[in-house]
Length: 295
Image (cartoon, rainbow, N blue to C red; front, side):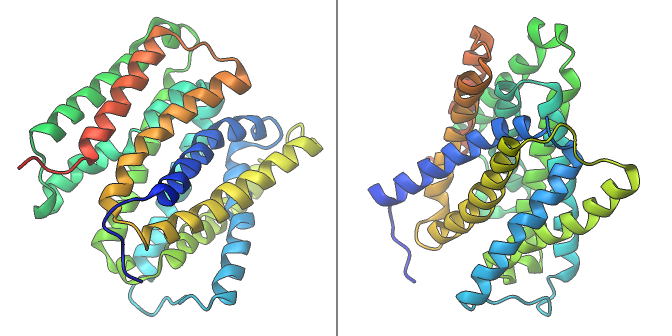
C-alpha cells in the first residue's frame, strides 16, 4: 500500500480518537485498580488483549513468525513492556491521573534525545533542542509542586517517568533489532504474550489478584483491554501503514492533554496553575521534538 504524503481529515480524526483513548486509559486503569491488584491487572489485560489480536491475524492472514531472528529481542521487548506497565499502574495508585499523564506521555522527548545519538538522520536541531528544554521544564514543574510533595505521590511520579523511559526503550528496540523484520501485529503480540507469561505466574506466587471487584469494573477492564489495547493499537498500526510516521508523531502531544482532561472529568482532579503550565510546556515540547528539521 502506497503511503500518502500528508495526513487528511480521516487520518487526523483517527489519530485524535486514538489520543482520546490513550488519555482515557489512565483514568480507567486507576478505576480498575480498585478491583484488581495493579500487577494482576497488567498480566490479565495483556492476556485478554492478545486473544483478539491473534484472531485478527489469523483471519487476515497476517504473518506471525519467530524464525526471522526476532524471538530474543521480542522476549526482551515483552519484558520491558511488562515492567513499563507495572510501573505505570502502580504510579496511578500513588499519584494523580493528571501528573501521571504529563510524565508518562513525555516519552517522545526521551525518544527524540536517544535518536539523536543513535540515528544519523535524526539529529537534534535548534527547534528540537528548545522542545527538549521546554519538556524538561514541564517535568520539573510537575514533580516539584508543593501539592505533589504534600500528598506523598513523589514515588508515583517517579514510576510514571520511568515507565515513559521504558516505552521509549521499546520503540528503540523495535527499530534497532530484528524486531523491525516482524509485522506490527507480531510486535504487539510479543509485548502482550511475553508480559502475560511473566506476570500472571508472578501474581499467583505472590498472591496478588482481585480486590473489591464489581460488574462495572469488569466492564471497564474489558473495554480498556479489547477496545483501547487490542483494537486501538491495531487501528494505529493500520494508520501507520498509510500515513508518514513523522507526521503522525506530531499528534502525540494530544495524549497528555486528554489524560489531564479525563482526570478532571472522572476524578474531579484540580487543574491547578502547575498542571496547566506542565501540560502546556510538555505539549509544546513534544510538538517541537517531533516537528520537521529546520533548513
